Length: 150
Image 1: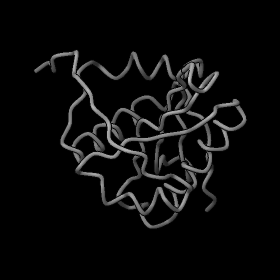
Image 2 (image 1 turned 60 degrees about the horizontal axis):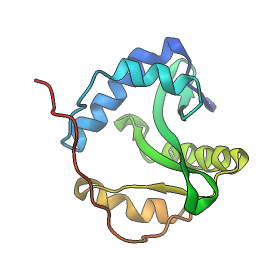
Image 3 (image 1 turned 135 degrees about the vertical axis):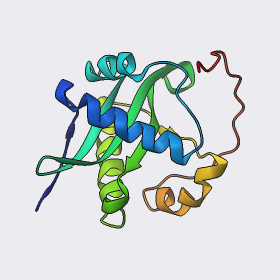
Image 4 (image 1 turned 120 degrees about the vertical axis):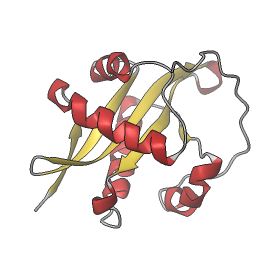
């Protein structure tokens, strides 16, 4: 069967929330706020989007991106926020198809750059991203502003 790469629609929300929960479990992190509000905002494609890999009626993978404005770029840049592929679909280039689509979308949107973050638990993915032209440029520092809810 053919793998279709498409934008998420409202009916995809339950499965997308499940996929994100799988990712959060694998990376040992938890969402600080309910996910549904963010899902709805990303559907507008104003500040980001959700891209899905679908085979028939099955969602096999999901990528989310945000579009941010920065003076240093003289416009927008793209940030790959989440990439998750179901365990059964791994090794079938689903992640590669999703990454290529988000790179193409960012380029078409006029973004100056696309970036991503790797956590200690996802460092093993560095060679995968390097295949698609991503390079290590340094480290990042963050400060959490939202307390996680029980």
